[in-house]
Length: 54
Image 1 (cartoon, rainbow, N blue to C red):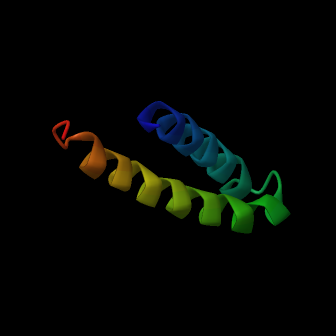
Image 2 (image 1 turned 180 degrees about the vertical axis):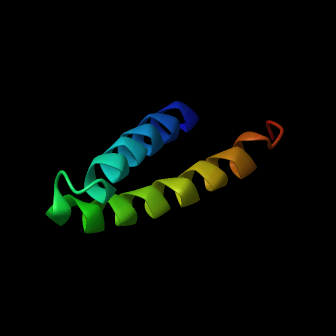
């Protein structure tokens, strides 16, 4: 799951770069939302990924 979170985080960052650069103005809002969603998912994955196996 951590692998997928990192992949989607990178995709969101790339989409944000294109959106914030003015290439696709309508994609900027979507990129912002995706960026923050995947940052949260990444942090959650880091927290739960460090847990020991119970």
